[in-house]
Length: 295
Image 1: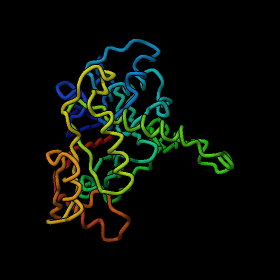
Image 2: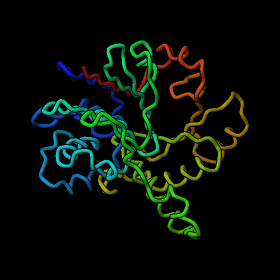
Image 3: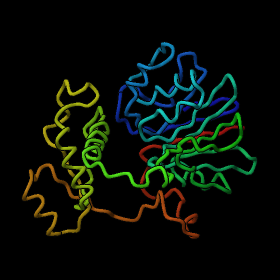
Image 4: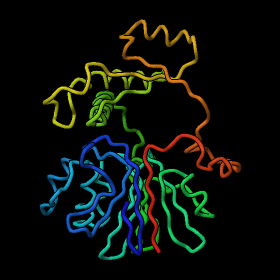
């Protein structure tokens, strides 16, 4: 946790990269910048190599690169991040805070204000329920900068305009290459991992691609073996379900695991007028949580 007169940042971490040294909030070497982030920056090595000036990294966390990028470029770096993220960054020198969410909102993020007008953000809605009388989802592809006091949409790809893509033929080879590259880079991890397999076409396809790359570590360019010889699969299923039994018969049964769902979890629900009463902090403990306050 970080706390000063103007801001508080707290983070409960699910360690994936740099398990030993990547504890958060991340703080710059001079102590001027503080970062709490829930995310994975897949192109962090490329971004580190392309910095305008050398930076004394204190960890091997893929997210630490956000600190020198902000220091050297302000908020202009957001479109260069290839990853999923939601972060709050506090600049102590300027008493400025920056909050941003990835382009399509993979990582959850909520923003609200308390009775005194202080700003709070959190990766779980239930963290704000008892603090903020009003709160909402932070819009994907946007950044809020206290220096301007407004939201700005940083992610505005040309393909969102239909006229920009009208008549463009489908390039199936490029599509396959892009999908395989996306799956490969998202296997970046310093801990064992698995896949959640629904049995549908999309998860089956992604699992097949992941299995191809899972034997070598992504972080060192495939120079070393990954954490286990098998890609473990997890599937929600009912007791005695025939489809899961058939699947386990076709592959290594030790690498297939059934998950029983014991009750509803509504951490990121659809819009519902009753939803505020449901988020009281009861239920499963969060994997990652982040909050920031500025007076």
